[in-house]
Image (cartoon, rainbow, N blue to C red; front, side):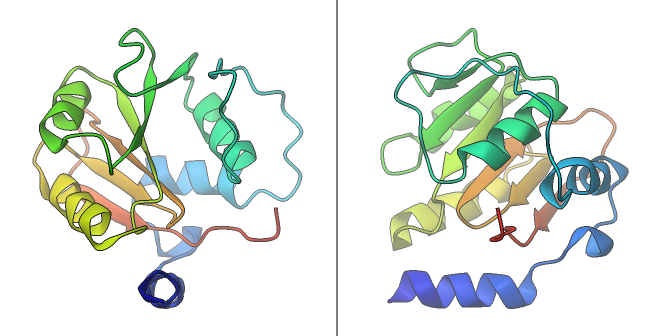
Length: 159
């Protein structure tokens, strides 16, 4: 029940691209997240069993960001982006990966109270400069030259 309450709350407090004050995130939202006809092929290599309900949008975002490979957290440290479930990934190891320049894709950060608390701790860390919260998944990254910001964007349900 709490999960659905959090989803409704996220919808009302999140922004579309027009509430975004970062050129990087605004461009990402315009080109990919809210772009109606997305026909570019995805160039991101993913694990064979990777199939969350938002994979189409996530792969489009990662392709736009120039990511070559997405791997599960702790399985492949050479990947540009790492897919993590906060139920099993320790915060200190996630932050260390971000310090090494990895993009962390967090699966269902609001699934439980523990994952929600860990998500809040991660986005408050000085190592996470940009966080993009789409409720069903989130992105954590360090971007040189950008001030620390946490973005709440509405997940486009029509996809």
